[in-house]
Image (cartoon, rainbow, N blue to C red):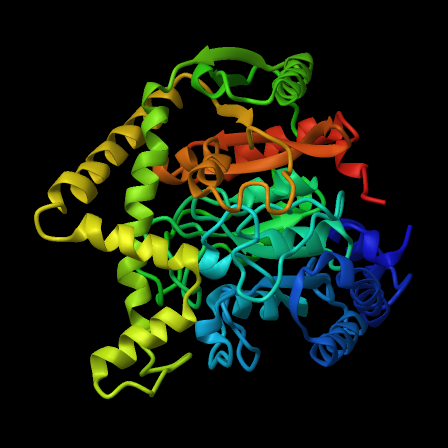
Length: 482
């Protein structure tokens, strides 16, 4: 096994045991980027010099007795997260020349933990997309099949992990943007409970839904990374002071646990092979001693509509700051301020971003605000209450992560409505305010399939326990793209 193929846990043991250095580990990842990224196209910016400097500093800390799990670990960062002194484009031409002037809280925490940053990864523009095809710069390819998408919007981060160009990565998840690409690329992707991780320094898409999450090669690695970035932040009023993530229970068996199987998630339209693979994963959980309970979440069918209204409305508000005046792309050809605004945004934004801004502006306009946005928020509360009730009966919920495996590049790009349906199983967790993650559970036609595990708000510990026990009883997470 090459150094860049190690998990965080394995690499940490090797680093502490002085079997190799962080510089050697980091160089292995940088070499993998040089070798593979021409095909995969995961990175927008590779920070080689910074990474080597950080690796050397990490090695010094090891010499002084450091035992920090993330010290010296090469990590990639989705290019919607600000890293001081490094370009931050959000996958958009409107920020083509922008360089971050401060660190996001999650970056500051990872720096404190000693992590090594190898680069910024590609994404759908401002995290709007399910395939990574909406990036203004390049289309990322799935390492399992270069003719297919890696998923989105955190497709660059996920592809980088799957192709062993880093040991882990950070993404963001507004409606499935960590979990769906994790399913497509055969990695672990975790969306924490809203408020578990600070959003300070994250380019806002939908502020009431956005959440940073880890993308890793194993469940324990996801837990380690989540531990490092979680916690309250005075810079983010929506962040929570809930107790820290604990790994005390992750090794415990799941005998006697009640695992809910929502019947609304197993309906017509799902790929039959995925239905069979997920059924086998659920059978494995039963074999491990869990009790499988069929439950009903009838409001699930409204979650996608609520999501679209909420997201587009908040997008239209959040992206108003990109006006061609304060920062980012600016068209100064206009003879009045209004034309500068209009031309800058028309030239700087891609089609999907413009589409969502227009839909959201309409939904928030006078005469329609109460009919659309306000109604969506009322149903959102009802969905949250429905989750609260079902978690009184079960410990976790399980479902497919995506209704299909990774589709071909260009296959759904011209049909936004079909593309939106890629997130049909992931969106409810964001609307419901719960935590959720995807773990590898099989293959269909040689392509990875993900099992989604969901738990009540701030109960990541139970979710991780179930995910880890399933992972240890199977071998899907050990498979690698050729």
